Image (cartoon, rainbow, N blue to C red):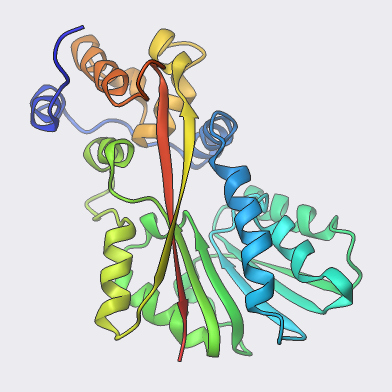
Length: 282
């Protein structure tokens, strides 16, 4: 194994290639599920949300929640159950553009054993959603990367939160794993957003988000050992594109980079952090 790759060396190997094929919505959903299964970040995030948020909303009954980009609802169901504990009324809306994922969200929340929980699913884009009554909590869990206009999304979310309510963005910092996504994902000409961008937008509005970082670990050993087989799905989601389209030399350099950013002594086990930016809206 040679010296660690610099990002400039990686870019020189890869960025002179044509854009990689983007993931279809179906491929995205499939690879996302396998990627999440290879990481312990999601259970850490589920636990944090279900433990930290209910006390902050203890004065609200009913508590109104808008989740943006809720996917299959696997993060939302534990939070909804925790909010509905002790018979508190919960009005929980999930906004999700991918119809099959939205159906999974609806099924998960309907299955929550809480008679005081009323779930609603909205299939569509957040920019088109009007919440009606102000929300006590608006949250984005790994969904702000994809908005075309981050300032507009932040303003729209803030307009939905009642005074004293909470805005939460769970989003990755631009660290080694996400550097790959930023570099390789075919973003259709759009800028990808990360935690640093969201924090800047909130601060520009005079808000002071509290930030907590959860550091999970991604098991990418199969991506290193079998990148065209069992590890392909994790590699696809990691770079946001079809990794099979990489030329062999570029794929080799990419795998070397993953080896270099692995935890010491554990090749293929990668730091997988998420920043939780929590803002109390005045």
